[in-house]
Image (tube, rainbow, N blue to C red; front, top):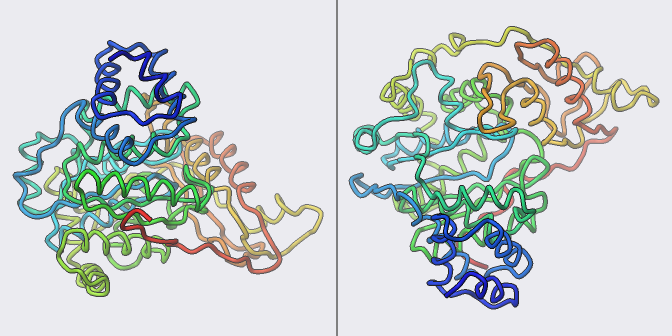
Length: 449
C-alpha cells in the first residue's frame, strides 16, 4: 500500500477500503505522508466525493487518531449536542441545564470561537471564577453528582482533524460535505457520548447558505452517527439573523439566564426547546415528542433548569450570585444606540422613508460587527473582550420608525464602535411591506433519506 496509488484510486472515482483510509489518516497525522500528497488526496475527494461508508470510516479514523474520552463511568445515556455555528448561538448554555435537571447526564467538551462565531468556552469564562479546565476524574465525578459539566476540548482530541482541517483551509478543499461532516463528527465520536443531537444552521450567518446544502450535510452526519452505532438526530434551524437578542460573550450568558427563567426571545426559545426535546428523546426517557416537550417546558417553568445552572456554575468555581443578579457582570465602557432613522437614512436616502420593515439581514455582517468590537478572534491567538457585544431590539419582520431603538453596541474603543456602527446599519435591507419570514426550525432528520 502506498499513498500515490490511493490518490490515483480516489482521483479515478473508486471507493477506498477501511485499511486504506486508516493508512492515509495515520500516515498524515504521524508525519509519514507529506502535505503535498494529502492535499492531492483531499482535492480528489473534493471532486469525486465519498460514499456514506467511506465518510464514516474517515470519521472513525480521525476520532481514533488521538484520545477518546471514556464516559463509561457516568451513569445513564450520555447525550451530546453540537451546532454548526452561527451568530448569537448560545443554546448549549440553555439545553445543558434543562437536560441535567431532567436526569439526562451532559458531559460536554466545547470549543472556543474563531472569527465571528462565538465559542461556548469563551462565554462561560465571562462568569467570574468559572473554570473551563478541570481534571478528567473531576469532570466524570461532577456529571455523576449534578448531571452537567462543560469543559474545553483536550489538546489530543482528534488530532488528525486539526491537521487535516488546517490543510483544507489553505488548499480550497473546505467546502465538501464528506470532509465537513467527518470533521464535525470525528470530534463528537471522540467525545464519548452515546447519542448526538446536531443543530445544523442554514442562512446568511451559517456555513451552509441554502436549505439543500444544509439538508445534505445533516443527512450525511446522521448517516455517520448511525453507522458508528450512535443515536443521531439533526435539526435544521434558521440563521438568517442572530439567534436571540444578544451577541457577545457575557451578553449571551445573560440572555441564557433569561431563557432559563422563561423570559427568552421567542426564536431562541423555540430552537433551544426543540433541541432539548430531541435530546430527551435520544436519551430514551420517553418516546413521545409531546411528553418530551412537556418535560422541557416544566423544567423551565418550575425553575429546576435555572437552579441546575447555578449548581453547575458553582461546581466549576464560578460565582453563581451573578446569575441571580446579572447586573454584577462586567460591562463595556461605551454604549452606542442605533435608531430606526440610522437604518432608514443609510438604506433609503433618496426615498426619504420615515418607516419601514426589516426585510432581510446579512447575518455574517452582524457577526463581523461583533468581531470589530473585539468579541471574536481573527486568529486562534487573539485575545477577545468578553464585555463587548450587541443588543438587538428589532428583528426581521418588525416595523421600525425613525425614533425606534433598533440596537445598542457595547464596546471599549470608540474608534471600533464607529466602524462597527457603519457596518451594522448596512447589514439590513428594508421594505415598505411586511416580508415573508423563514421558519425557525425547518426540519428534523432522524435517519438517512
